[in-house]
Amino acid sequence: MIWVVVDRLAKSAYFIAIKTGMLVPKIAEIYVEQIVRLHGIPSNIVSDRDPRFTSTFWESLQEALGTKLRMSSAYHP
Image (cartoon, rainbow, N blue to C red; front, side, top):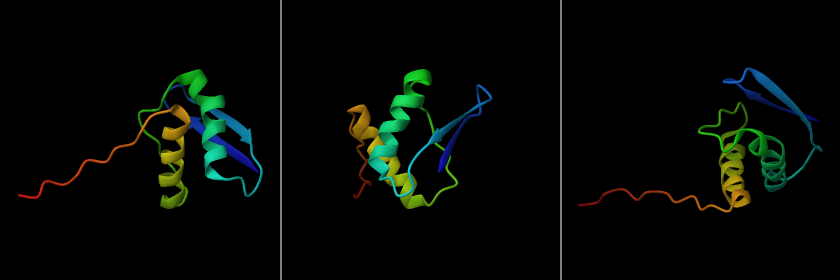
């Protein structure tokens, strides 16, 4: 399977071969190795994939970068 990552700002695309059934944490690791090392950490991610994939990918990406994703709590007076 080919994973296409498009950088709209640089107007470039990256085509990365991945195995079908690969787990999201491994895909996040590949993303860091192939994309983040060239362009830095993204300010946003747009995906045409399932929202569950995007959520899991974002969490895995944060883990691969060694950062923690902290959600704000709602204000309850």
